[in-house]
Image (cartoon, one colour):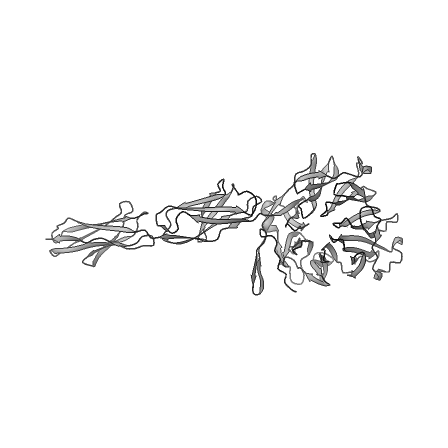
Length: 561
């Protein structure tokens, strides 16, 4: 299989390439958001999102299920009902799909009937002729779905637009459906490509549970996939299909074979696999739900062998990424990011979160975090040991205002120094005057905050040079008599910083001894005596350290009588 390199928003993923192919696919940076509800509404769930960020979903208003479009992902607009359904208490409206032209399809249901509905870009509703289910909507308004009759024999159909009559989608000849209306077979519609060229239909004989999946091109069957338990969630404008497929490997949890995510392109199936960890002899279930124009796919995957509980996942260049660890900190306690779908070209998609203990569920819009870039500057580089260093980290987002809340973490050689809050101009400061003379590899880390992605600065090399010193020596008493104790005192004055180190006391170049410098007095002392009378040339040498340059005093003459 040829590897296709795609870019899924700089903020979301960084691909590291090596000679052998993809070496690493990083997890995306995502922010989960919920949208405001219309007045009087409760609940709220999302089913689709378009390239412009318009979101389709449903709410409950006065105990009635209604369809809502969040324009631009912000402003909720309740779609009007059919005039015949106004005030009808048992009519429930379910959202299905929206397209790039602003049209929406949904379903009106009661205990006795179902009716597909099409809303144009002006949000005028129209009943779709004979439809009992709608499953696909093209950008030009063509639809795929299902019609029914009094004998309850469902049949897959296509509509050219909201005003047209349904065109039946033929059954595969292998099913021997001589009289579909008589109940020998039934069929139902699947998705349609945005350009309306490709569509999916399913069909089955009543005595055969396995469904046949057919690909239609411009209304004509182009491929029959047979009874492979092939489920299709999406078709692209070029006819690329994604969904889940029977692997032929028997499940150890269910009575059926394991279904796994796939991509079908130009007659070739590519299995996308699942999260790792499946026991030997079996596979984890997975499902590919949505793909954008860059080839990035979102869906779900089983992650533990004991049950079929899934995690939301993403495939980038066919490399699977578990989204649960990415999103866990943003979800209520006990909730798991279990599924993902409706991925658009801006990198936004819908996440389903569930608590599998309580049955609670919720949907969120996952948005790519706005990329940020963190850089470091210094007031003095190189600096001298003891000099005050003022480091400033600036956090710059790719769009929008600079962050003014939160903190930046500061590191020296990978060791955390501490955190400092951001200012009103998006900067964070770190000050020190105690760094030893050396090269300090400083990094500043801005963690993800709100809609902003986290970023780590390039390594900033802060050079700290040794401070200079001046050493002076004295002897007391002077003159002294032979055998008398003489106290040698060295005073070491640094150009900056708090002095520390050792002083060696010498007579005529011969070391008499050494002593540590007292930081408070800047002095070191050594006591000795001389057995022989004479003149002695006394010097003191401060030994260089990583923070201080060495220095030697001028010689003083000690007379011993």
